[in-house]
Structure formats: C-alpha cells, structure tokens
Amino acid sequence: MASASLGACKSVRKRHIFAMGNSISKKNSPAPPQSRSSRSEISAFLDAAKAAERPGGGAGRIVLALDATMSRQPTWDLACGIQGQMFQSVSGVGNLLMQLVYFRGLNECRASKWASDGASLAAIMSRIECRGGHTQIRKVLKHATKEQARDRINALVYIGDAMEESIDDLVQMAGELGLRGVPVFLFQEGHDPVAEAAFREIARVTKGGWFRFDRSSASVLARLLSSVAVYAAGGVKALQSRNSPSDRLLIEQLSGGNGK
Image 1 (cartoon, one colour):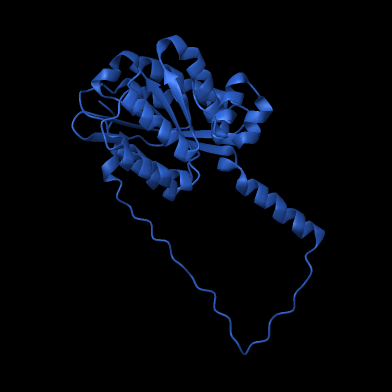
Image 2 (cartoon, rainbow, N blue to C red; image 1 turned 30 degrees about the vertical axis):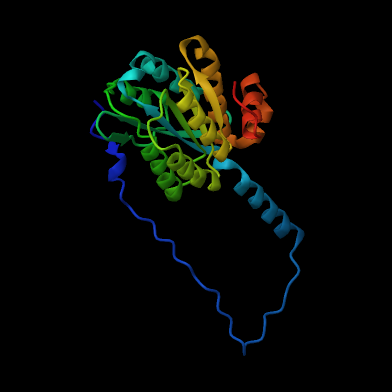
C-alpha cells in the first residue's frame, strides 16, 4: 500500500481561475513619447526570451505514471530500479523533480508528492502492490493536465501493457497536453495490438515517443528514460550536447520518428 502522503488523483480539486485584464487607454491623454531601447536592454530581453523557450528552465518536472494492475506484477521491480537512474542522468544538466502516479484495483488512482531524488520515490514504489482492475489512463492524462495548469511539467512518462478505454477519449485528452507542449513518452510491455495503436497515437499527437518495455531491453530502456530526464531538465539542446545514442533516438522521436 502507498503511504498516507499519497493523495488520490481524483481528490485534486483545486481550481485555477485565470483573471483576464483588458488594457484601457484614455483617448484624451497624449501618448507617451517613444524611446529607443538601449543595446543592453535588447540583449537582456533576448536572453530572457531564450530562457523562457527552454523547457523547465533547468529544473525539469516529470510525471512518471505506472499501470499497477495485476498483469504488471512481473516487471514492477524492474520499473522501480530504472526510475532511480533518471535522477542520476541529469547531473550537471539541471534539477529534476518527479511525481509518481499509479492506478490499480477498482478506480484507485493516486499521485505522490513531488520528489527530488530517486531514493524517496523508490521507497514509495516499494510499498505499492499490484492489484487487479482495468486501465485508468484517462485519469492519468487528466491529472497531468491539471499539474501542467498548476506549474509547467516537461514530460509525462507512462509504462503499461494494456488499454481498456475509448481510444478517442484518450487521444482527445492527450491532444490537450500536446497543445500545452507536454510530450508523452509511452513504454509498452508486451505486444497487445490495441494498446500499441493507442500508445502510438498518443505519442504522435503530443510529439512524444513510443518504445518497447521488457526485461531483455532493460538497459536500453534505462538509457532512454535518462534521456527523457535530460530533456526535461535542459531541453533538446541538452540532448544534442550529451549526444548519446539514446539522446539521438529521443531527438528522432521528438521530431516525428517512429519507435521500434
């Protein structure tokens, strides 16, 4: 069982109200004289613009979502071990915060607090037991959308083996994440064709990626997840700078390539 600090996804009920202010100018007031910007002001503006374009600004946030239904039990320990490497991979690139989301049983879907190290997240995962039930991917996508509205997330990583929901509903919700600039990286265990079709489409509409997940490719998966972490912390430029094979594969996925 997860610790008491884990909050149910559906209990996140805080609503964000975006106030819209209209710019009102007085017709009878003379317009203020225009002044020419100095070189230093222009330079400062360009630097700020570049920093705003970089995902996470050096402090990446990843939502790591896991299918914890009974069919996932054999590879749960594998996922627990790999996530810790994601934190190690961003050393020298930027800070990384990660939140664990999982679903299992009868409509149970929970989210952890944001963690800044692999050990605390691994401790949470070690207390979770897989239970029978249907997939709840829609809740995962909805939760990620709420987190993005609260504070920018740089990527959603999902590991699962099945899809028992409406693919149209999932793609619609994934598309909303894509419009907000959140790529979804899906790692599929097994070869369920229905799940593969859904996962590939979610990856496509969010400009993320689809990959296989199994014990035989554990080392490859670990490197790919480390690349996702590097991307979250420093963007595509960080991937290009490190330039490992998994970094190049991820760049290919982000640019519209197909996972193998």
